[in-house]
Length: 443
Image (cartoon, rainbow, N blue to C red; front, side, top):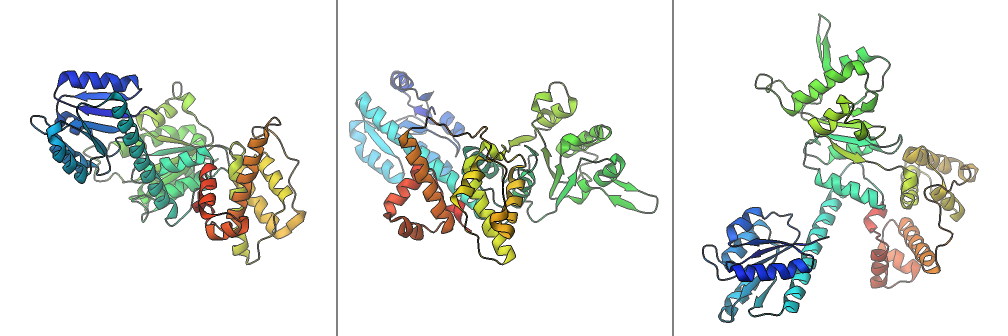
């Protein structure tokens, strides 16, 4: 990625010369003649480096440093100093500056310091992201498992959205865990102690669904609808794309009221977060279908995609062993020995029923053992490349050995070390090489 650089210096010639130098090295440079405009743009999500002169009118470099560190104490800030200001620069280092450059300095020295400062900032932000994700994954309730890039990205998005009440659209094939993601989003939000109510929009009785959603009055009693019952919490509408056409206008009107209640209705409008699932991504219909246009653009639903299991084969054995441990515990039996031939079949099976089908197969395997069979392996989107070179094959085999050992020992690295005969640092290096996180293997 292109690293942004904020460059603050009241001398125009210095500002422009060094700005051009950094731009030639592919940095995204913003130039400021004083500190205040830069500080006004600064946030805790700033991904780059700040360079500021020490001697400036108004807010000087030290004051700029202090105010920036108050926004985020882990910012990478480089101070520019003249020969007589070395002691001030040293004080700046004590206050948290990353480094200082004494004028005149070479271009090479500048670029080296900026490069290292940028790498440090990226590491800080990555560690924050990992801590945030770990906190979410370690909380009570369901977990979102998977080591594939798509599942890691999903967990990052859910982590970012954990404090948001923005409505969600979760789309993907049947059996892929959309309900799990909806429940996860609720359980890790400020609404976690409030109602989580589920309703299926796929119905042959539109009037009953209308009564369920909006309530009814039969003359003897008034029954609150699910929007109202979910006040303070979450309403999860499954298969929203199957909603009867006769109810679409009413549902959109309710969403409009939730998103922007009028002055007259603000006291009676329920506070509810809406999460909906679709069996497919209907964004391509948003230009022609008013219903989907309203969902994606008018009410700003955030779209989350769950890829089919066959597109993330690296997650299959992880999910299988997780289901195996959970079901063996539930049935009170010892885990079955999983032959390597079965794992091979699992990874290469097409899984048209996705995670739900894998879960069902795992239960059958526990109860029936070797009598449980899969259809013949189907080599489709995850077909192995017959031209894979030796180094790649060795790497794949090494990765599988590590994952298998971590599964057997439930993520206990000391036991994995002993089984594989690896030094601690070697094990950590290999896990980093294959992007393996021990947390994913904890029981």
